[in-house]
Image (cartoon, rainbow, N blue to C red):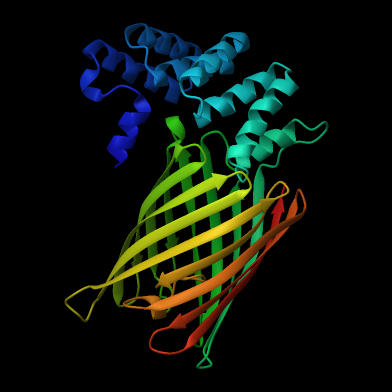
Length: 371
């Protein structure tokens, strides 16, 4: 899948590239990664002379914007968008160029169009905020989240997570988090983070790693990789793989999700398949799970959402009581509201009914601070 997406982003099938163009592409990418911008610009111009593909012309315009040739860069992005009107990176870049040229009205037109298509996109919100006089866009976000659950048999769990993340920049995002959980009369801690990198064409590659040494309820190790990419106007497709190593079991999971931004509405669906292999058993136990949600955005970043799920979907921390086979049905809602541009609250609740009997109530409260 990654190979197919990367090939589509390049704009020219690998088999159609001449040896000269392939060598020129490698050299141009190397110079760009080394941040030798004038040399990289010359190399991409030479590549475009050999092979006028979309990606090469994008980087010519991008490097022109970074080296001060703003008028030429704007013309380049306008031509690219005439060819691919929905290209996310070109629209963002055109908004940046117009803002740097002092064309606030022109930048706002581009960014408002993007916000209409993707109203919850942090990059778009930050750029629009930067157009406001005397107001700098937020770069960081910290949050403290409480997660609790109560079962009809009297069992309970409580946990808190403190996290710090960078609000998405042009290419890179990261998040670090630490969790403390009390469940089944054990208190355990977990820490780790995520890293994401956006490539050409809106494709994002991400990875995560979390550790909880000596845990019996939480997974001792958790790793994941994911891909996400806009595939049409307002439509984002993602796929990923995750691995959890518990004290006595290994869980492999694969899944995909689809998000549709339609004006102020957000419709999303996710499917996941997990295979659990307990150390004491020879065969794996498979489990299917799915969730669908509908949300309504209001204001700049506020969201009300309802969701329904079937299978082993979890809405609190990963836990050993949720591995193996779990046939359940869940209904819930979430509400996120920013009291100010820098301070927000989010509440969630889910009611899960298990086929073997019993009900689990999951709920959470999150406080968000941006600066």
